[in-house]
Length: 97
Image (tube, rainbow, N blue to C red; front, side, top):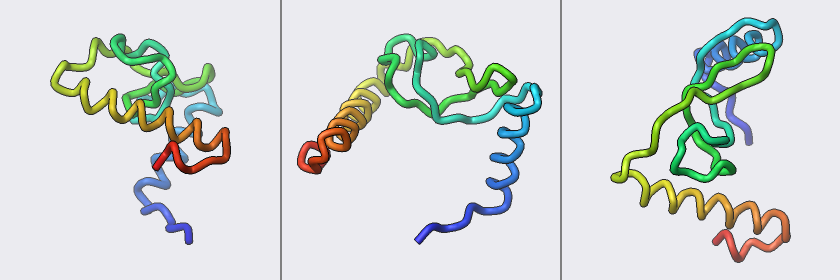
């Protein structure tokens, strides 16, 4: 059962898509691969950060290192992401549980 997005979210998603498709630049909160945006996290980690959308796609806005107070939580989340991907690739739920 899929729930519909609230109207204000639907508008923001359409707005971000429009910026990407029409060469308009916009800044949004996006869910993307790190790709050196946060220097002390792996490039493959999926992060929720501010991103710029334009004709080139979506790029993360550079941030400095994540604070030490968050690193334990972030490393745990990244390790969990890796286990979920491995479980999906292998077709075995055990590693992710």
